[in-house]
Length: 353
Length: 237
Image 1 (spheres, rainbow over the protein chains, first blue to last red):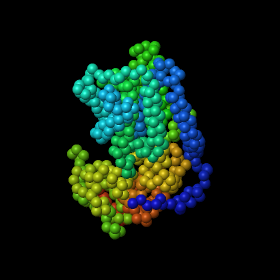
Image 2: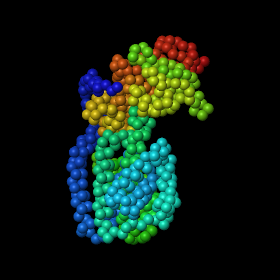
Image 3: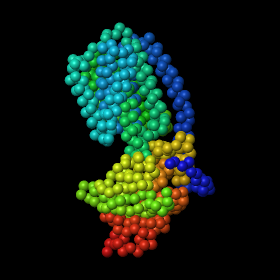
């Protein structure tokens, strides 16, 4: 059905015959060309930079728990966890624009799948975490099929509702989950393995996000955000892409929830299904920059450290860090830090960042 | 397929929005391999018919048949994959994507071929130098041209153009017109609406006239121009 790309030699010749300078439009057109050149330089440098950063991160993950005090290791684990939440949320919401408040639901579902498998000694803990991720992603498929036909606030609210529904089901299913009384996991003398697991998860999540963002798949997700109807009339099966991205996005909080459950040793529905997990994912990504690779990583690091610092200063103040930041970012910095840097001309516009 | 058998048949198609009959029992056949015009006053149902053909809106009743295949109930992307593509009256680009990305995202071939094709088409619409600019930052005329170029990325056999000449400068309009004629030579069929009557009369081999959701006339430009009902619809009696 698709013909080979047809050449239009006559048109090209006609264009080359037109003198390049003299008209007003050339001056306008020159600016993006310079910018494109810079973007090209960045684009050749960035992949190498990422490889170096990746290597440094892996070394840091291996070494840090061996040398740092326990408090800082737990704090670093929460940073990694927040990065995982932000980066994975960004895959669906940042790129397709479907703002979801369902991440708490995925985190909670993953926590319980993992905790149950570990508590009943059914599998190795790391396998339990992977099963939790896959299970959560599979549950996300019907949820996505149901909700992703809605747009804008309707989708956001419905996902919030489903997340709450999951919490209520887990709370009332006493025989399996222990209901509101919660679930205890075996006590761990050494919790370094949790830090490593969260580190690996963060590296995998970021790598997957990078591969999506820089490939044609990223473009497909973006065009859904930009104009879904236009995308459909140009042959993009938007439903398929949305549900796929949604399930992938749910995998990571699922695994993270299981590792988190093992880390804190006790979970109950209110903790792991708390809306704060959704807000964390939303706030970190919005602060750093939706639809960028760096944005949610940056947001996860900065916001977690900021909220930890605020917590040390005032136990109530820290609660408003994430929520308050969403408001401030939306009002004064739409697009987040990355967009701000781009508008200032400090970084080019490229899908590599 | 025979050249003169219709590529698209619209069979007694109606569409209501609430109590409003946007289209009321329209039947027409778009002949293959020609530029066909669709004219009518504002609100006569032209855009609704485009929306029905491309699956954006489903008919309340009636049938749309593309190459012997009923497409009335198909989702938009399936209809596009069968070979129908369109532009929108108010352009619908991907604003926060670059001109080049707007092209690449709908490409169907491998990266290399998509890139070559996109470059070629952007050059044709004189947007090669703005390829890394956000679509949102292009001028209105450039946006229209980008939308047209993007449509050609998917190599459709039936192309619907909703007011392609509006807001495009005369030089580019002339080139656009040439390109439309080239597309027809390549065997494509074009269904075009526009208020630019002179252009329409010169490029279309056949014209359909809609008024209040009904087909009131059809024929060659010459017959349309002398049709009393058309004159009445446009100028009142």
